Amino acid sequence: MAVFVTGGAGYIGTHTIVELLENNEQVVVLDNLSNSSEESLKRVTMITGKTVDFYQGDILDSDLLDNIFTTHEISAVIHFAGLKAVGESVEQPLKYYKNNVAGTVILCQAMGKANIKNIVFSSSATVYGDPASLPIKEDFPTGATNPYGQSKLMVEHILTDLANSDPSWNIAVLRYFNPVGAHESGLIGEDPNDIPNNLMPFIAQVAVGKREQLSVFGNDYDTHDGTGVRDYIHVVDLAKGHLRALEKLNTAPGLVTYNLGTGQGYSVLDMIQAFEKASEQTIPYQIVARRPGDIAVCYAAPEKAKQELNWQATHSIDDMAQSSWKWQSSNPNGYES
Ligand code: NAD
Ligand code: UFG
Image (cartoon, rainbow, N blue to C red; front, top):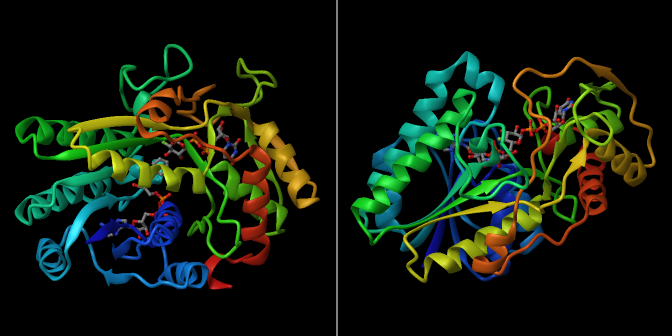
């Protein structure tokens, strides 16, 4: 039996596949390489000494899904495939709804047809919007402020309806907080296509000399140093959470939802400082206006995942900065180098 991983050539996918292979799972990957390259999967093989069955194709292609599901014996699906750039989603909402929402519907239809009914879905802390209190628990109200977030929330609702309609589905909705860092080997990591939208890859590119300076979006938030606070989670911790979620699905829980975060919030300036320490470089930055849509503080209540999945994050902020620096400094141009 194999685990089918959509979007497996991407950032979180590759790290999760390493953990799956090291746990002696067979892995089948589908990725259209719209935001990744096949090189990432070659690196996975370098790390693990194992290979995956790779299909370059799209989750919107139901014939291809049918073909994969008849060729391979699949026990469960981890569904990472999705577009994730918030700004782009505002400019091109239909692209996001088609890819993220319609793509998931097509995937679930093909799964149902093949009688594969265990799925782990990549959701996001963005579904909590601006939380009324902290830390954020899974039962907090949801609401999204942009089409990307809406697409995640819509899929959560669709999966809930699906589980209600047919109790033989087992679905783990994982709400990631802010994934950062890289595998300790330095062979795989986050490789943004364009100018990074997110803080850590931007800092890493400044440290390696690819960008002149970081813009810090606002220092007048109600936080310990005025800059935004987030729950950064090491991608390897996050990856391990997926294996625990797969184990949970084997107990036939129906639909379950978990925060994957550390429970600890760090500011933008905290992250800069950690990166400066790890890289022994100065990170030049300037304070600029707040970024529209940003919230002041966001961090998880991680207890539910600890209790029910026996999972908790173990990597520190220094581990995140060091591994990120190792990846960026050994691959200044990402997988192209
Ligand atoms: P990523 O872009 O590195 O990986 C996503 C992969 O999916 C890419 O390799 C891309 O080529 C592929 N893909 C996209 N659309 C596809 C399609 N229609 N068919 C086949 N493949 C397709 O992103 P990531 O950071 O690894 O994120 C993985 C998932 O986690 C995404 O669904 C994302 O929305 C979600 N998520 C990410 C974050 C984050 O900050 N990285 C936070 C919360 C949730
Ligand atoms: N920031 C800067 N400068 C930058 C980039 C970010 O100061 O160049 C700040 C932001 O203002 C924020 C913090 O760094 O305070 C983190 O920003 P990110 O863009 O790295 O992350 P976000 O919390 O805004 O959002 C990310 C993803 C979302 C996802 C969310 C929760 O982009 O898609 O984490 O998982 F929903």
